[in-house]
Amino acid sequence: MTILHQNRIVIDPEIMVGKPIIKGTRITVELILRQLAQGITIEELLKNYPHLAREDIYAAIEYASELVTEETIYPFIDTSHGKAKVFA
Image (tube, rainbow, N blue to C red):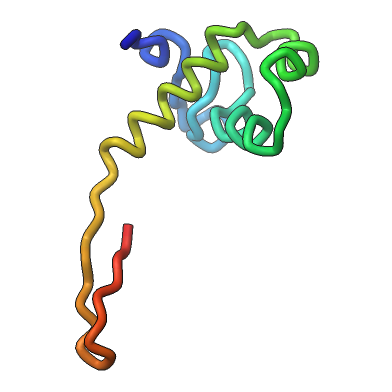
């Protein structure tokens, strides 16, 4: 696995309220992921955002993937209903 995001994703409290962005832009990882989730293709993203490189998009996906990998799930037993609930 490559580590694209370490060189391409930055977090700066002075830019976009500290959301992770593509280095040298104001394009957030969130924007890239939302657009992909809505069915926008990588080619369309590259056309719509000329400052993006294909590697930037892959870095955003990789960054999100690592966040999900590190996510901890805590089960919560709701004794009033006798069922387990899970909170992320």
